[in-house]
Amino acid sequence: MLNKNQVQGTVKDLAGKVQEQAGKLVGNKEQQAKGLLRQVAGQAEKQFGDVKEVLQDAKDAMKDAAARR
Image 1 (cartoon, rainbow, N blue to C red):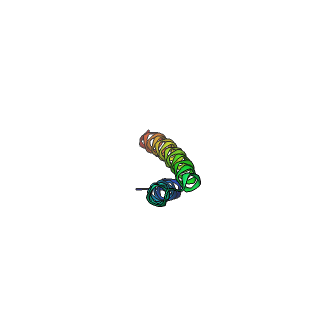
Image 2 (image 1 turned 90 degrees about the horizontal axis):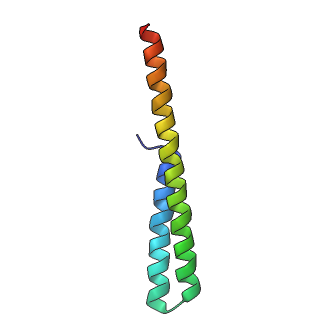
């Protein structure tokens, strides 16, 4: 299941790609750069969400193992 950071990161990455392409279309380097920056921020947030999910899965696995003892 996706967590909030994974979803928001994916949305930011996609919005950044759209912004970058729009900047290219109209020849606006500033919008291109802002789009790239938004993509990086989105990818970082998604990766943070990925780490949170791995940690939660590990925590749940440990809890299950302890319950079986």
